[in-house]
Length: 163
Ligand code: GDP
Ligand code: MG
Image 1 (cartoon, rainbow, N blue to C red):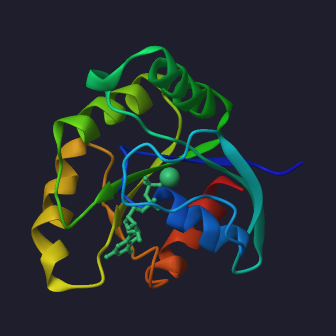
Image 2 (spheres, rainbow, N blue to C red):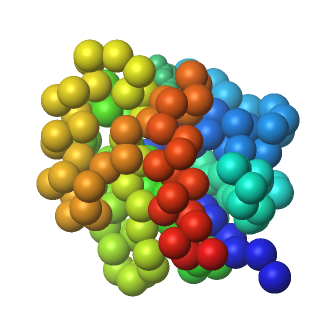
């Protein structure tokens, strides 16, 4: 039995980049264009001796709902329902947007354990966004750089609390 961890957040925050880092392969498509991850992707993650199932999601905005995008939103809701732990990711260089609030509300109603990841924290540009992240009510944000591999020990700490 392995626990299932879902990465949830609006498009472009770096979910697929983290997913690929955790599975050690480029399974998920990383792209600057929002909504590129069309399918839910699942893989076996390894991090500092922990093994768990990791799920990547599309993370579409509410305003974009048409039939395809409604399906992708449903996919996010399903991923939340299936998860033992949710990694809620924001882009610390952008700060909190209405789309972040929207996804945060979905996570909140689920009542599932949540760790807040403030991604793109490799430079000074992330400082204000990191502070703003507290306003989501998910506790202290974990500063992360999925691209540069920063913050992985803190991430493994929160996952090991659930395992
Ligand atoms: P997703 O839509 O949430 O899955 O985001 P992606 O993983 O596709 O990443 C969106 C963009 O953010 C890509 O251009 C990534 O290279 C970039 N990105 C991801 N992680 C980081 C990071 O830690 N720092 C910076 N500066 N860019 C990142
Ligand atoms: Mg993606």
